[in-house]
Length: 207
Image 1: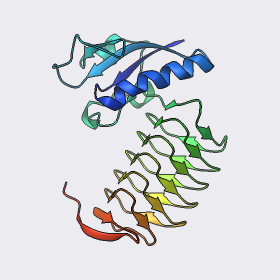
Image 2 (image 1 turned 120 degrees about the vertical axis):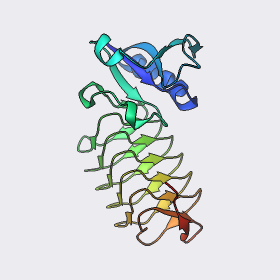
Image 3 (image 1 turned 90 degrees about the vertical axis):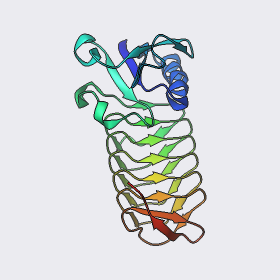
Image 4 (image 1 turned 180 degrees about the vertical axis):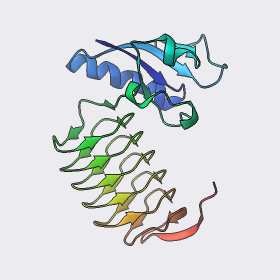
């Protein structure tokens, strides 16, 4: 079993403990050491049965440890890519032809179809459908119940809200946000906040 630390201490990081435990129940894989905190407020606490340690010397000091980032972990504090792993709940269906980047987190009951490609640090909450030939670039977040039809491209840094959906062969431009329940039927320009059914551009997304 390999040593693992979860990067972050917010609610999703705490939930990820139980995904690790579910993975281990199916096939012993990870020796979970605890959480790494981006600040000092929670250092020394225990969350969901595991200790919180400070960010700092871990990249060098824990030579055997690997890392998985939770939602909201600052990219400026990322460890080396080669020390970052994906975490996939055993209930998720992932095509053997799909590719997941470093630091992806896939919650229970997700579907990742044929030839789908996920970049680094894609965070997928429960019940998401990523269909065949979809491409999700780095640092994309899917809230619960998002549905992407086939051939969709979601550019880097996008946030897709709960139960939003995107029609096949469309592009969601870099840094955009889809509101809860949003139904996208045409390409989304970069840096857009989209709402409604059919989706309309509400405003530009603030940096």
